[in-house]
Amino acid sequence: MIKQTILATIAIALLSAHEPGGFRIKGKISGQVEGKKVYLKYADIPSKTILDSAVIHNGEFAFNGTAATPRFYSLVIKNDEPTDRVLQDRVINLFAANNDNISVAAVYDSLKKEIELYSGGGTSLAATVSGSAGNDLFLQYYRQKNVFDEENNRYFDGYIAYLNPGKGKEKGPHEVGMNLCRKMDAVDKERKAFMKDFILKNKPSEVLAFIALQAVEQRSINIEEIDRLTQHFAGITEKGTLTQHFLEKAESNKQAAVGSMVMDFTLQDTTGAQHRLKDYIGKGKYVLFEFWASWCGPCRADIPHLREVHALYNKKGFEIVSISLDDDKEKWLKAIREEKMKWTQLSDLKAFSSELAKAYRIRGIPSCLLFDPEGKLVTRNMRGSWMDAALIDMYGDLFTKQ
Image (cartoon, rainbow, N blue to C red; front, top):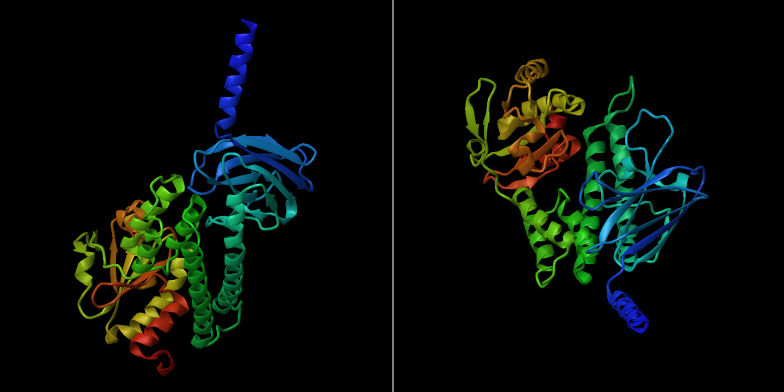
């Protein structure tokens, strides 16, 4: 009987040894971190679910977990200091898969805050992460992409300074803003080409699917580029969580990508009369769909510029259709009167629950989409100096003739 029990125990152990194990993450954080809580969450598909938590003791913490397929996780180190700012916890994002034995080391103050990684897809490069082949591949991609991101951010900071020169100072000439926008567009083009090449040169995997998801979320991506990325994953028979998510998002994003035809939705004007969006398209004019709301400060700040370009270019064939994401009609109407918006005004008064806003992936406002005379989406970036440059390209420079 004892012999049989021993043999059975050995058999179970052998069987268990061939089963995929979970992953382990061991962290070593230096700085003022004693007693701070660390949370383990998914970083790839938005979720508020906390998978596990630990307390840092002597600078160390550990997590054990299982992943049916490789996933991108967040290690969120709780900020206990009083602050009136949001998303101030420190973050390390990393890929983990079963059988990974991961070591993480970092200086607490060197880590990025949640607000700095709010758009998703990034991590704190100051952290050292080892023990995950999937994370090594991700970092190979992200380190190069981050070079483009930082260059773009420098130009964007200059652009914001151009828009807001300070009290008592005049904004520079249109050409200054347009030059900065052209530089950002050039960086965006290089970044997009790098992302596409990285994806197409590597074997499809869950990590690559996550990178491809970031690519199809870019506002400058077009339908053909999305199709090329999805074709790269066509031969996969067993699709993990991230591959499935990427393919689903890629397909839904095509309807609002550059090169797509205008979608048909019905909205009401200020009198309550119903209008189809297609009624404004295909009449030989370029049409701007400008998403805004009465409560949105940046939206209201953009309206004087919209008044300017409408006065200059409407006679050339440029139309504006403002689509409000308000849910209060009186506030919407009051803002229109205050801002003297003399062009077409539409809304379904459903705010961000609007099916139109969801279909066009409007996650922040103001947001401006330009459609050509045939109803094809030309650009999802038609604000500020980008708008000025586009109008000059389409109709000539009327700004210097004022």
